[in-house]
Image 1 (cartoon, rainbow, N blue to C red):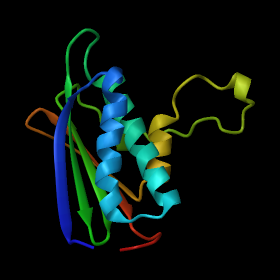
Image 2 (cartoon, rainbow, N blue to C red; image 1 turned 120 degrees about the vertical axis):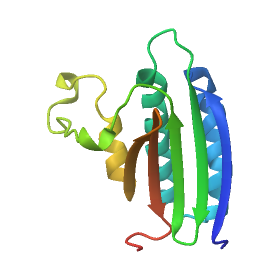
Image 3 (tube, one colour; image 1 turned 45 degrees about the vertical axis):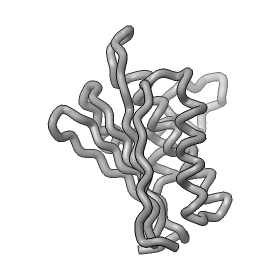
Length: 145
């Protein structure tokens, strides 16, 4: 496997572009040779993070963008999501949703950050120069590094 391959592109932060965004990510992931279960988890973690950016980063009616950098490394894959929306550190908001409550009693939403943290091997947030940067990493093999 290559030591590092980078693909990068920018999309409007709108739900109608989610399918296109996910196709872009899947294309980048093929070079990583992850197992199907690890690839599924990584896609789900990335999709949850992207949907959170689309829904919450920018005020209603204000157009926004999300830059996606995908790096394939020997040890796995890293996706960096960059947006110019409101500051939000998902790592500080470790949510423990009420998973034991009956489904009809659970509030709608609130699982996104939990799923990102459960499915990714590493989640790193920084804010620099007015930009949110969320790095989501998954190793090629469980327990790597």
